[in-house]
Image 1: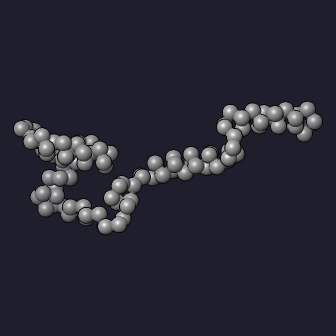
Image 2 (image 1 turned 30 degrees about the vertical axis):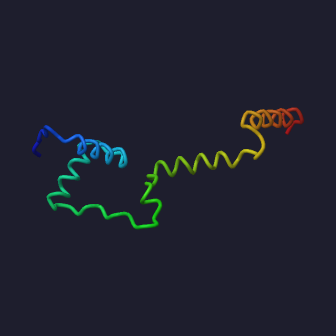
Length: 104
């Protein structure tokens, strides 16, 4: 593969490339390669967002982010609605002590 060095990139172009990289979570090099391929007609550009499709307009979580969110929600749902976590842990310890003392 060939390497190229680009110089004198317009500030607006540079900022837009950085913005795309942040949105996609990609390295700048990958974004620039994608944009070059699109401009040269080697690959099709990404389709425009469908109006009303909020996930595509605002972005969406990748699999790792969705999994982390689900795990956090599962952990939160196991807590009582009105008790902070430190009280829940304290109550669990008391319950364990009672079971131990009663032989259970």
